[in-house]
Image 1 (cartoon, rainbow, N blue to C red):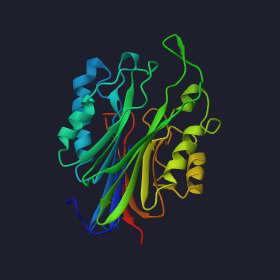
Image 2: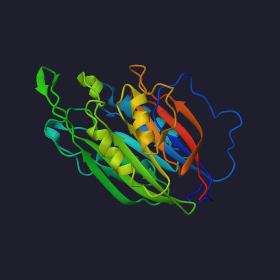
Image 3: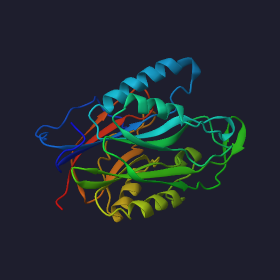
Image 4: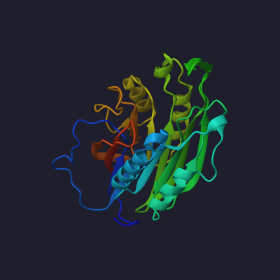
Length: 287
């Protein structure tokens, strides 16, 4: 599929844990121009030095598979956090991914630098076959909830929301990517501390046209998240299949507004992350 195509179908992809991977549902139409939005989690590639090469090979294979025909790719935890909160410039993993997908425009952003950052994945990216514009980011402050890590008492670092706009088949499309704090890992809940969710909703509610947001929302009880986003006019692609390899939780979502209609979705496992890939197909709603 080329960069230009008439208004019509669209597809979104994002990491989820499925039963065995499935193809398109029977009867789903595939002809015509499509928007295929690909949502791919990159979870601290190469974090474990013993497995760095294996992880990178698995990551590259899965990323290439997932993004093969995608119009948009959303990536999470693109880089590994460095000691003391240092941030490599240029970001090495993002730079390699751009080289892997030379036909894509892209944007990347780190969270706010913080010496408390743990040695896991940081940074969000959007890749698109059509040019990106209106690129923005917002820091999402985390509350001072104490937790223990390797014998030290710490508080969580801030999270991030990024956005960009693109035009596909003459239709403007707003894209958002976010990664929220995992309150359930801190024996708390984003229902009690909902500031990050509220800040995200405040921004996506401003979209004047078709819009999608993908992200690791890290909400164990996803029903409350779906209800909150529904009040802002956004619905999830799916809420049934687990998105996390470690526990049966739906942590990862793609939400869409009334400017789009979902046609299909599929879930794909990947060895490159503890999250899997959710792929969804959309079409633009009538003007």
